[in-house]
Amino acid sequence: MEKQILRDEYKTIRKNIKFKKLKDFMIFLKVITNKKVRNCKGILIYVSKQNEVDTKRLIKYFLKRKPVAVPKIENNKMNFYYIKSLDELKPDFFNILEPITNNIVSSYSSCVCITPGICFDKKGFRIGYGKGFYDKFFSKNDVYKIGLCYKECLVDKIEHEKHDLGVDKIIFL
Image (cartoon, rainbow, N blue to C red; front, side, top):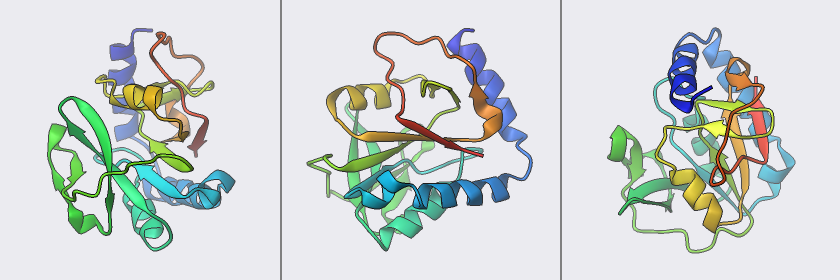
């Protein structure tokens, strides 16, 4: 199925997720107890919006435990910047909350990247928002990638291209 059709279909499905707050909490628990997450040196994480799996609770949790960095788009490239609180974010590119700090991540070794997706398939491939920022980032940085989604947004197979890179693990409920 064409990516744009899947993107539109699963955005609608996400808008209608039942028991979203409960599922968000259960996904939160699965993430914080994940062995790779517990043992990593830093968390790279998107700031959720609209109907995405809630990451703000995760950010608040990890800020007390390990370095947290969120993405920022600059010159058509995604970089991650460390933050110390959610107050260090402001809406920017695509009205997404981005860091206003200058503390750019210089080394991604031993980091886990919590990766957004509209839907995921069983092999870890995802439909994102179509700009390719995460695929470009993953092609240059070796990080352990975790996708978050609702089970309603898991599909059997997503047709992918050579440049599409899947996540290592999907945490869902």
